[in-house]
Amino acid sequence: MEQQLEQAIGIRIRTLRLEKGLTLDDLATASGVSRAMISRIERAEASPTASLLARICAALGLSLSAFFAEEGQQASPLARRQEQQVWRDPETGYIRRSVSAPGTASDVDIVEVEFPAGARVSFPPHAASRGMTQHVWLFDGELEMTAGETLYRLRPGDCLFMPVGEGHVFHNPGNAPARYCVVLDRGGR
Image 1 (cartoon, one colour):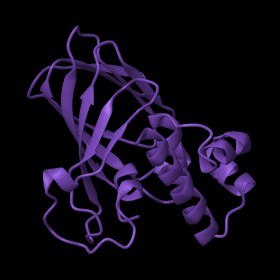
Image 2 (image 1 turned 90 degrees about the horizontal axis):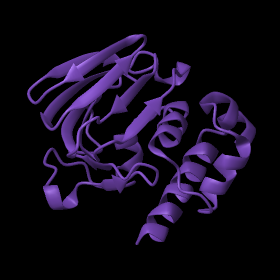
Image 3 (image 1 turned 45 degrees about the horizontal axis):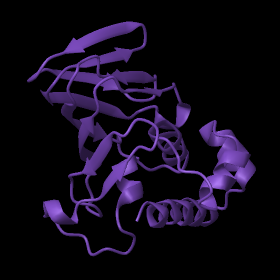
């Protein structure tokens, strides 16, 4: 199953890259991910981390939710839980569920995340994500968010707003998984 997902991710990246008329070098330059790594991901020889995949998606003009939406899927305003796309980050083990209905005209994506105890994911500043913003709403556990030079400690019920393109770090300093929602606004992309 995991190999099938890696193949599907690779095929989707290659298809989107070619549809946009981008070479591997073009995508590497736009995303800040090496040409070799993109090539390995496209051939399903490497599984991208959340940070790498987010950078590639941003360079392709997509959010992670839009990337994982089933291509050609009939748009419906209802996204049933059993039909929502789920992805597991191979590096940290965090589980990402695309909650919002794919294929709609909305610029907002809603994502549920289960973030393991001790996990840390860094999203470096990236020009392709400028103009995107997000709210991070913590349901369970604890979460430390670094945005720019500022560290925010979130407790259940807290919600943090931040720009996406300036870079940020998610960290769970606790002994239990953190569960939170990300509401991402692509800003009319």
